[in-house]
Length: 184
Image (cartoon, rainbow, N blue to C red; front, side, top):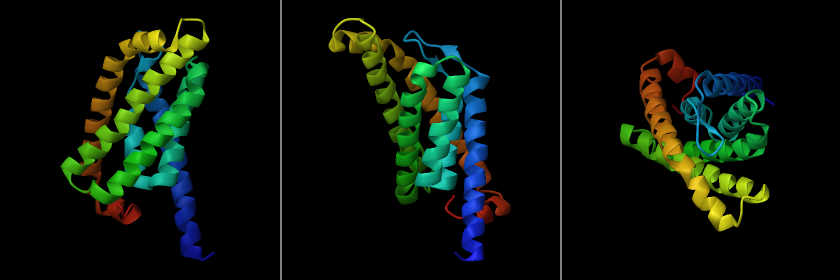
């Protein structure tokens, strides 16, 4: 492996680790309990920012691991596998869309909203599965009950989309950031 390529991989790995830690901290900094047993938080802004900075693979790893670790540390261990999958897919989708349509402000919003749709649907389905598995009735009935979490997740998704778009637009102003993250 060429020296410059190895440096780039190390930089991406370190940045992914930092963004995973930041995603964990942002998720834990403000947790508003939701009616379905989860919580609304600030972590999605970091999940999306990581996707835009790092691309699909490293972005998905950071985006899934940070919030999943926050669930574990916050006493929501039952959500860890779902969060790892949902946030990882969210980042994967956001990064892929960003590389094709996200260079404008409107594109950033479209990427974020598409990714946040994964989050809203993912937690709604997981909430229904969790309730059904714990004896809450039929899956359909449990999905209906789990819909109570949708408004909070929508609010979290809208905030995460807007905050990450503003962060990207601000970071693009820095020549140093543009050198380190040429896809931004």
